Image (cartoon, rainbow, N blue to C red; front, side, top):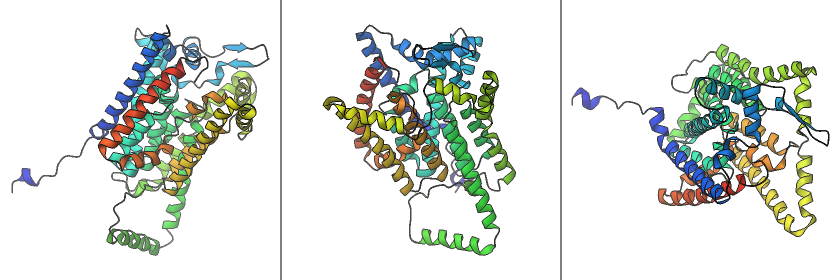
Length: 423
């Protein structure tokens, strides 16, 4: 045998490994944009305007062009201030507009398109790391075909936030703590729900420190873990073992990660959100809680889900609206069920913490109720049970399922954005 015959094959690049997921994602998003263009043209509307210059997109553009300080006072006394919108997206819009011929709105659309691809890649990386490549591809496709998936192509912050969150979680799972903390800090500059990423990093770090301490208790614990691993191998278990928060000691290339790096990552994680919230408090003169007053002006707050429950209950006052009420209850039940299934499937702790906080903030906030499906969009670990089920189907059957749902989702997204209210 020659050296060429015995030489191991080069490792597959990360981009090549993710290519099927990214190509599938791009195809689904292209279908959604095509449906939006055709539907909008039939209604004599501009699809591009719907994507870049309506609702929250306008607020981000104003921040990019004019800075903070703009507000709208409504007849009922509410004050809508642009301080409610976190700064990373408008910063990127302003930066791109400054060095290119693009307007801030155009730049927001470009950021959204690129960030959505980065988010899809991040979702694949997390699912591939935990469950394998096929499940990773399916996870990306399921995320793409969500009924509210069209938001991923809007000049909103959901795609940017999901990209930062997914890659931060991937960094946690692979023991890259400083990277995880830095990305969590950027996520905290993107949306208030950046708290979910910070919580995931902190909980995973605390548990990892506790396991480190337990591991120093004696060699017997190490022998028991080794015996358990050999026992599983002897039993012929082939299912991928979920990667837990102590992966910094087990993942290739990250062995021996120092607790100092973990602590540094944990310290970095909350800096972005804390800096902006404190700046808002100083800017408004209302101290550290000033941002809560800004959100109150939008009638946003955390009430444990009371306002949302009332909203659902009011749907049952008449027969036609009762059907919508039933749909809302079924939708919430599905979200909770997916989370429970994720727990039973032993998803890694950082994913459970992140998805749990995102879900709680979305469902238990007194914000505009029509936006709740959009607010759940970053909670991609909720989709992993569906991705696993899809990955077990034959390729032809899974392609048929994804294609059918993608078409329905594209039509719904076009209908949704052409409606009167914001998504």
